[in-house]
Length: 563
Image (cartoon, rainbow, N blue to C red):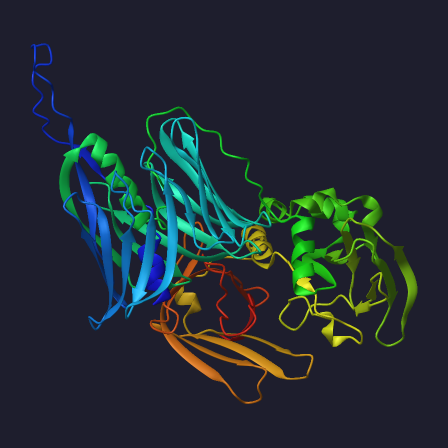
């Protein structure tokens, strides 16, 4: 029910408004006055969410919205929405949601004289939205508050008279969502996780009059049932139309996020801050009680000579996501060897004592490599061949966290909870970006080639490892002529899982493996390369950032089992 209410109440419409035959008389004739220009306005009549139900909208004789009724898919009334306290222009001043005669939610609305919304308030301690416009009357900012604390800010930018960009920033300065604009309308709206990964998205389709006709939600490879919108056309004078359009934009105030501009010059939007910052990570650590944050940045070879050179070579995708990596001072580059795994470490408290020791699990970690405090992050190079470092972070209150930098069986950062005195860290490793960079490097390596479908047929590939608890993990892929068998065990004894699917492979500039998992996971597409000389197969993440090994930690490199 919440999803239906949210979609009904939240979809900002660029309503079609077209001039009709105005029948203007000659204004130069004495005593003859030209009638007002007549325009066509499209009023939302019904919205249908195929798996949940529908909402019907009702208007008074002047076409002002006065009520909507929301029904379940079984045609049972869920609730009624009342639009009340209409002013002289027909603009509602309050909204009530009613179920079985009881009001379960209400809001107060304030309008500008030109029919555009100014303020929407939920309760007395101020939760709601505030809207800002430029001198030309165009929406440039929408701020959402919760109990008088800023929660989100949506920014609108224009190229000349046309909407060009929309993006939303949360209270911590992170990108919450952004909209792709085509021809002045939103074509796609994408939401992101706090770490910058795609969470889900919406796509839009418009009718011939420019009204939103269909809205689809995409979550990974699953497309949720569409929401469909239908309208009725009415003809009114241009002045009246401005107020009716304001009402319509509110009825559909979330998906389009857009209040139509008047003719005006360009408005400058605030600069968008991109990428993670140290301050954002420290705020997240404080909120989640983490002692430090860590990012695994790959393995550095001798050829880079310094960790600074290695960081510069990480590539645009990683450095745009974590831009502060290039600003870490050389005094905070700590290395136990000239090559090894590279980690970025940020203590939650900049005053914490950071100590790094070298040694081994067979002996002790008692050779001090570094001891000190710094508000800046650290870059640590260690584990040239075997684990050889230990990190100790002592907070001002004396709490000490001990961690041995190491990757787990799935090539993810192993949490310090395994060590005595350890607490779980905040992992902000750019795993997907590293894999895409690695794939590009392999394309230039002559050992890695794109196989043909015939070469893959009859082959079996596998990946296996032991967990820290000595549990055996296996992932096996068998290519048949038309189907692919996938068997996996994530360390649960003999508890294997199995899935089969149709598959195809198309070589080109980039080889693409397509797997149709139907109801289980839909159609997946992966870039694929094979090193026949060393019996390796590499399967990259798909377009959504998901690996083929969906039910375990992602794996990308497989060994040839049988050919």
